[in-house]
Length: 289
Image (cartoon, rainbow, N blue to C red; front, side, top):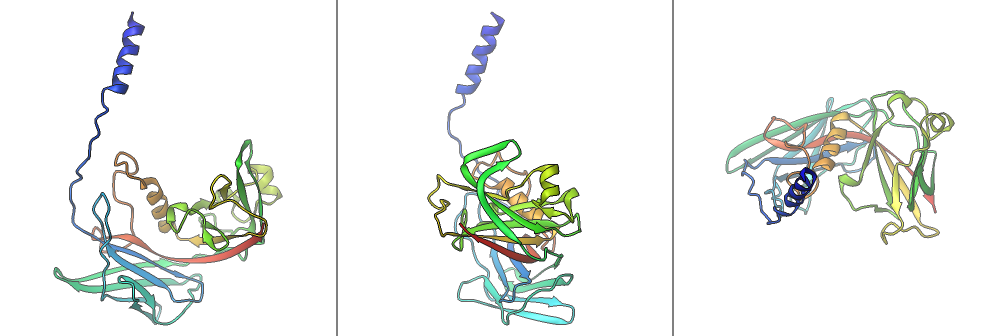
C-alpha cells in the first residue's frame, strides 16, 4: 500500500503544475555593453558599443558618438564610428603583436553625464601553424556518432599549460551554427602542453580529439565533395575564455537555467558595464573535402 501511495504522489507532482507562468524579472539599471578585440591580423580592428536589453529581448540600443581608442605603449590607435550605429573601426589597419598589452578607452556623454570605460588585454603566444585537418566519422575513444563528421586538426601546441584555445569551423567561408560565440569551442591542453595535438603520443594517452562535429542531418552542415572546411584556431586570454563559457552556460529562454549572476566582464568601472575586450592571435587551417 505504501508503494502505491508513493507512486500516486509522484504522478500528482508531475501533472499538477501545468499552468504556464511568465516571470517578471526585476528591472535593473541599464548597463553599457562592450565587445572589442585586437588580433594579430592586419586589418581594421573593431569595437561595438550598446546598452543592455530587457530580459525578454528586443532590439539593443546602440551607443553613438563615442571617443574610442586603443593604446599600445606609446602608440595610440583611434577608432571611428561606421555607418552602423555603435560599430567602431580603427581609422588605420594594424596588427597586434604577441606579448603586447593593449589598453582600451571609451568616452561618451549622454543625458546622465560623461562616462569613461576602460579595459586591457595581453596577447598570448599561439601555435606556429595548423599543419593539417582531417574530416572523418566522429569518434572519440569509445564514443561515436554515425550522424556526425568530426573535424580533426593537427598542430604543435605551445609550451604554456595555461594557454586557452578557441576554435571556429566554417564551411565554404560560412560559420557553422551561425555567427555566435556559443558555437565556438574552448579548450586547454592541460598536461598535454608542448606536445603535438592529435599526434601519436596524445592519441596513445587520451585518444584522437575532434574539435567539432558536422551534423550530416543538417542541410547547412552537410558536406559535399569539393567543399572547403576551414578552422580558425585562436589563442585567447583566460578572462575571455571564461566569458564565452559563461555565455554558453546562460544561453536560452529558461530563467531557471544558467548562472544565477551576470556574466563576468573585464570592462571597468566594475558594475557599470558588461562584455569583454580581448587581445588574441589567430591561425587558420583548411581542407577540401
